[in-house]
Image 1 (tube, helix red, strand yellow):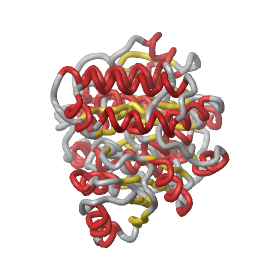
Image 2 (cartoon, rainbow, N blue to C red):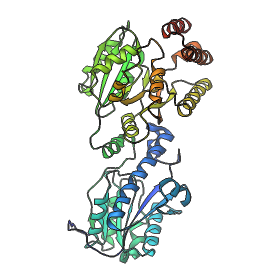
Image 3 (cartoon, rainbow, N blue to C red):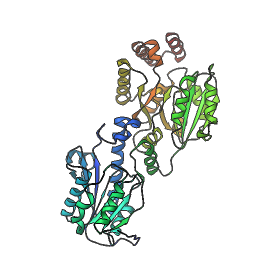
Image 4 (cartoon, rainbow, N blue to C red):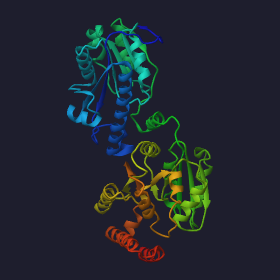
Length: 457
């Protein structure tokens, strides 16, 4: 096998084209290895984002090069895919068979469209861009095959000239698709066929939870810092796990503000702050009791461009930092919140989760236990967290609603079930609605707080 490298400028060499292979973002059917971290809907959401990202980058290549672009999808009709990605696209189904069968079919039909040079790409490598497509086409000046190696042992791009159509069967058949042997097996087949190959630079893909930061970094070359502010009061039971989950994020700082705990909450937070894995990212402060006051104390020292307001008994999902940056980076909303999952078993708790989802998405009313996030500058312009003894999250959301839409992430934080378990699901739901009604009727938040604490016990 001969390996060819070329960095010469692109030249006119007949019709060139690119085909994007993707799957329609149906929950439970796509990005399945990310479901443990993001959930089925979250994984489908990321599939949708990554497909759009890849198609938009290849649109740029099409406009600049005059090339031909097609999307071949699984899981939806061409009409539905065009409605999703744009009417300007040529769309075809991938068809049946394994990935090798679908690659052979795509190349054969692309060459039948009149292409002389054709590249097939997936959507898993967010750093794929027009310059890589240009290099692939240049590589075919002197090589028979161009491959873009992925760091997991596969490849993100294959390019061929129409003259090599007869070699497709030998290149794409009998490969252990989905394994870390795909690239090595394909290179072996190229050698056995007596062909030459040009290798592009390796790229990282996003297939498993540990690779989510690849997407985050590709989307925003400079990742804005996230300040996670956690007011606590006697949260020793779950604080260690809450902090451990938060510390999986990248470019974050954690500000724990204690309101006078009588258990070992402060000791746990300080121990976590001293841990080598925290890398100086955790600081522990104290303030008088009151969630709004504690949040504002944390806000006063926060350095991040983005603020996540997190309750001490609530755990973030893996990749939470990527989700936050992605939602605030685009036009999804002026602020955001996560969906809610309540730790524990029972039909009643599932009804709670359903009600929260309905309230958050249709009424645009997420509550504080869902982890509200927004830019620090936006929060400061609003005057910080409303200084109320109760309903501070409700009032903050009402103020945000006047500025625009609140985006609800398709992934959930997990909160403690203790209040529902102590008082009962129906009692907590009724109590919450009475508090909201009283607040809207103009009853003093101080009076509501006193009444709430007596009923809650």
